[in-house]
Image (cartoon, rainbow, N blue to C red; front, side, top):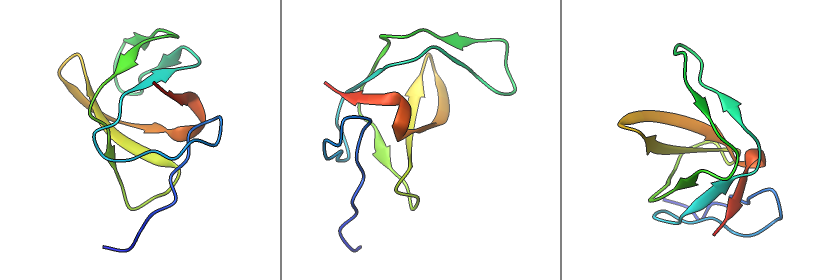
Length: 72
């Protein structure tokens, strides 16, 4: 796999397994859940898209845009 250039909202490099914080509260599509600002998300997984990461939150597997994340 070629090296990806995935960056968080502050321009920091993100890698598989990093922990990130949400910088904005986000409503989850397809559910009545809202992820609160400041939520810690552990063990992110990079995707084929440089602007998205895959992660698990409260047992749900979701994809988040990197513009709403800050590296911990």
